[in-house]
Length: 303
Image 1 (spheres, rainbow, N blue to C red):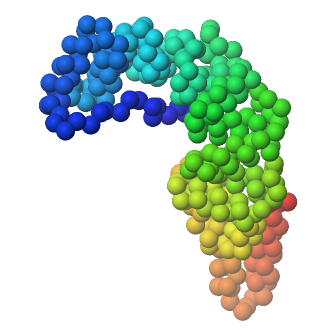
Image 2 (image 1 turned 90 degrees about the horizontal axis):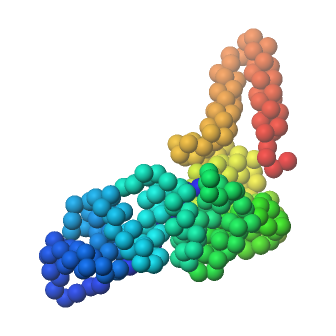
Image 3 (image 1 turned 180 degrees about the vertical axis):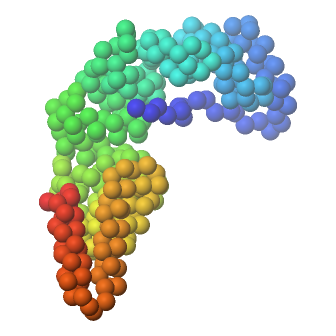
């Protein structure tokens, strides 16, 4: 599972007259050297981001570690991300998990939940029930990705009893906050009537919102809806357009369905180009097109 860069890092305070960045960083470093916990964190942030000082992940990790030792949760979280990715330190997911274990930041709980989903060799056994607990805690603190992932676990009965209505509720709340994957997942629920009444038009609206933000899965579903006339009027050119967009983003099934519709266009063109004679050629082209329609209908996911 991909982890996001945290958004809960402390913001820089605006000042009417800011000293030059290097001078400001020098003051921060002086305070950090004297053991000031927040300055150690801030210096780590500056070194990691290359703000006012040359970017240096290894030194950033050192200062995060000093602040983390004094109990700073954000420093612990940032250091855990570095250990998990092997950035500035040797890759050590077990150390990352240790740093996150008692961290109450929602981003930390979200990250730890992902570790419980996968498991960490020698440290954590896969435990979906623990992941549910952590995602729920993070979601209650406003972490929108945790809310979406919680919905996924409810939908699939992982770590908690299967609860499609609860999943749809999680997706709806996350979608209302603009979460793209939640919009796509909620669209899927409406498309198939899972935990909500089946509303193909509403599903199409949600897929269109997510597709407009680059979600390839939503593009694929819009292709299917135009292809087979579900929630949209049947429109093969529009279906091909959505399949192409999804394919460009690496969706393999979209590639397959686009090729199928392209084959249909080729067959229709061949039939139109057949001369009046011999008539068996026209019949052969008609038979090929009929065979295509039968095989394509077998792929209809809405049956």
